[in-house]
Amino acid sequence: MTLEGKKFGKMTVIQHVGCKLNRKREKLWLIRCDCGREEIYPNNWIPYCESHAKSHSAKYACIPCMKGPCTVCGGPITDPNKTNICSPECKKIDSNNRSLAIYHKKKAEDPNFSQKRAQQRLDYLERNPDAKRKHKEYMRKRSAQQRLDPEYRAKQKQNWLDWYDRNKDHVKAYYKAWHEENRERVNEYLREYKRQMPEEQRKRYYERDRAKLLQKLRDDPDYYKKVLAGQRASKQKSAQEKDIAELLSMFQVIEEKLNE
Ligand SMILES: [Zn+2]
Ligand SMILES: [Zn+2]
Image 1 (tube, rainbow, N blue to C red):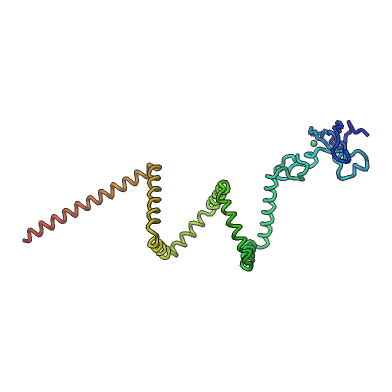
Image 2 (cartoon, rainbow, N blue to C red):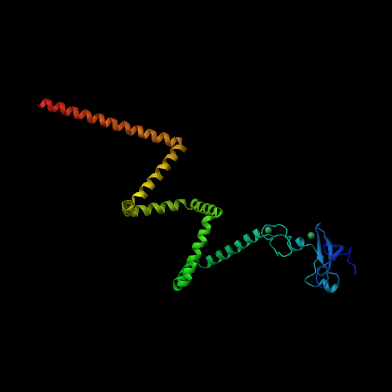
């Protein structure tokens, strides 16, 4: 039976190119699709007779034409094992979209569902100390890995900055209100903290702050000028005060002498 030159749907059989290296020794055919692609198909995929044309393994075009574009990016699918998504990247996007859709659906049903689920998880961990220990270990390991990954850190930072940009006014108002409410408590806590700080630590902090300040002075000439002007003003002020004090003391001496 020769299939060379026959046309099935969009594909044309060009020639017989060899056999599969299995027990059946199935024939392999070079086919050309109307879109211009050439591929090698096994005999089984070619609708060589009327009964086989009805079977699900019969094909009438090349794989990219048959499957249509990728549902995510719209590009062609060239891998015969893939169904309707072209690459791992597109698959990731697709699964993200799916989970987001599920999240929004659940959120529409119950606005507090994520908090409830988190509470359920916490309750479960409280009931099972073994699971809690395992969970803690896992989280510690994962966070250590993430801390060492610069790409992850950059991504987290960018996410946080984006979130802050969106909620800046709200956050600032919240912290302002909180500080006004707890000002005395905070001050007391800081005073106590400083009092209890070991000498070495205090020294280290002082040195760190000093290094920061010097760096800023080196980097920002405007700041440097400002600080210099402030220092000069304070020196002038103290000199004036000193002069006044001297004058006053002289007047005192003169008054005492006059009184004698
Ligand atoms: Zn094609
Ligand atoms: Zn794609």
